[in-house]
Length: 356
Image 1 (spheres, one colour):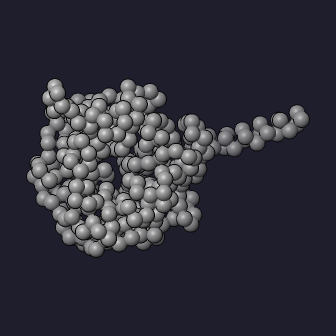
Image 2 (image 1 turned 60 degrees about the vertical axis):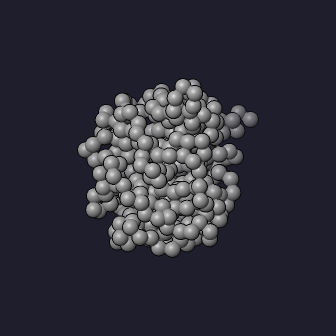
Image 3 (image 1 turned 180 degrees about the vertical axis):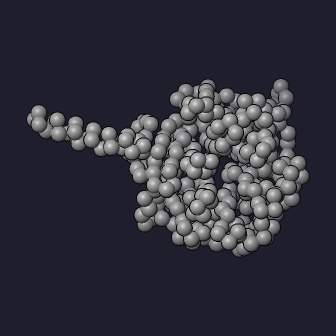
């Protein structure tokens, strides 16, 4: 029995030591996750907060470091739901603090929704978010920070019919304009795009790009393809991720078609890596919000390979946001059981790809 016990200890310790020396160890094991190739770090942004529920995180790299935001309150749709942020200072996330709410006056307030962060090159960091009683009735808001999220301007409402990026980050286009992937829900689920040449001062509206009948779709995420064209993958109610493409910097879009990837009517996000590959974080299941997966494509999204399974236990692991930082690492944030926000760091060069 002693031999068996000691052998069991060695069986566990030896692989862990190898992982630690290789730089791939997880920083926490709260959810029972096991290290995987390319997984550098996994942590919760906060352990305690003055709100019980959270959702819809976003992350950006500023000149001051990483900045994350999400909405939190009693529960989604409650009037006390506000936009909260945390800054990563020297590898440690600051305590969550509220930076926006839906208070209209002393007798009326609405919930906040779906923050999206964007760092203007050589400029302020922007925080887009929504305010309103429901997604069918919400409106777009914008506030900016000149100091990496420490202080914020007085929020302003976006023009009528302009919602800003609805869940996922905007992307800069080759002509210098900013393309915001957006959608509406008041007339069926329909995808559209909003273009601003001056980072939110003036706007043009493109779409909706489909009729909302064949596919009920929202919340696009945009990739730049190898030939400079754009690919937008969208959440749908039809059990599949759907897509549209543009050859002219987002002014016109192809008919919407289904991809081979499942979608359980849940949000996802992706990024075009600097080596040209597309990286997608999504729930690879037709129903539910577990597992949460990372996939890669080296052919502009025509085919995908499995790279990681971030979560596979029962529960809700959803609404990821993903960026590639200046050092080449990939940063992902996502909802962890509506209890907290998880932050994961990947080395995209060390991911081991497998068939889906």
